[in-house]
Length: 112
Image 1 (tube, rainbow, N blue to C red):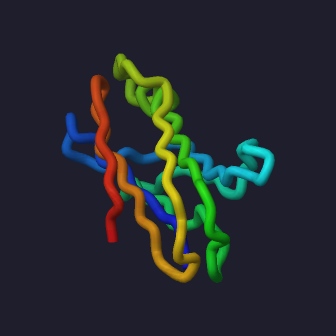
Image 2: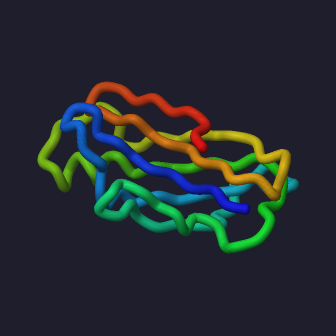
């Protein structure tokens, strides 16, 4: 169905807008292939990582360019990017992968 994400800057208590994001899928030869990209909107969300329709099962990686976000907000951050790797089993399900971010840490989970 879809892979979506959003980012909350937990230091500011606000959505992180304008964060560049890439989605990759691991291929049969264990190499990553880009399958989607975009940037978070004013609400810190990216709803267009995957086209409409079922998602091919497999291993995926979302790469959040947190360094670009910290630079744009004049914040000194420790993590230049965050990568989250996860497995899709049911291609008809919605997979929401939020990121809670601050300059010195991050957390993620499977949302709804």
